[in-house]
Length: 52
Image (cartoon, rainbow, N blue to C red; front, side, top):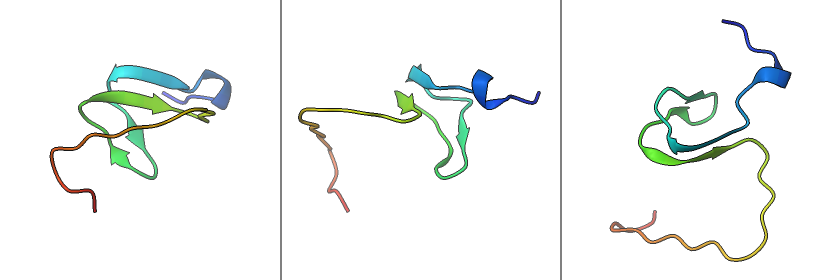
């Protein structure tokens, strides 16, 4: 199915299975996928592993 930019995915919150991004490849798991994010404030990331 051909999708035009007007009909393309802009935001998905939750299960990211089924999304293939040209830069990040096939996504999996839960999270947020956003096209053009404008944000203000503080972003915190807590990891169980060391950040590279």
